[in-house]
Image (cartoon, rainbow, N blue to C red):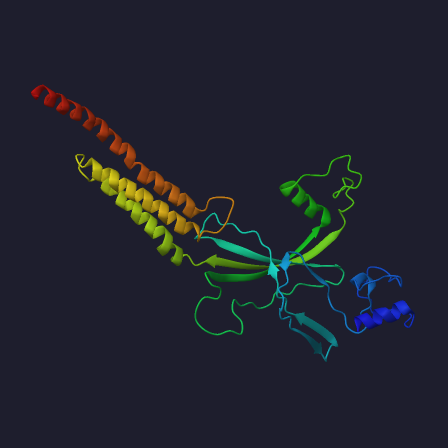
Length: 303
């Protein structure tokens, strides 16, 4: 109905739009496309919501929707389900004891239609019954809707100051004018924040415990008598190679990041603990070396 009403207005069949989709200004009959500011919504007004951090829309996705009509007040409510892949920065420094905030950002094209944000009910599981994890490897802790009202100038300043640089003074058309042209431009959006925590038991049993056991075995080096130098060297070399092989297995399960995680730091510390046995063996080599020379000299005198 929106397309039919808009085309009728542009063709001259209808003199005016009884209900423009956007009340920010008059409509033009020369416009093309069906943007909110250029369209008629005579049949039914549908809110225009932009998805700000969508990565992609999967093929074959389901998008159910529904329209609710209140007979008493002639009010109309419209809902739709959005299935998409979203981009959210994640912090893995505390892996595997980390928690993440998954954010879905939505922005409105026009701010004059917004009346009020009403908090609704929430649940980490819906329609599906049964035991087990809600998401494989994660525990969903909370869902929260965070409305935001900010100016375009403050938003651009935040990103340029923290992740880029301000435009040059000689830029003829700067993204952020110094005259404060964007100071009065308000942007309204709301974020759906899903807080999740990683289920760490699997990683503790399969990563941290084997690493600590290997390091505990390195203490045996200091129990072996000093005369058994070959056994000490063999034990340190075996533990070092075992820790290296374990690291290759652990690396396949670590999240990819540009900084070391807690498990990576633990492996580095364990390397240092095992390698500390090498300086312990070195003085023993120096103590045995003069003895061997003296013993050889005694054999020579006997001959």
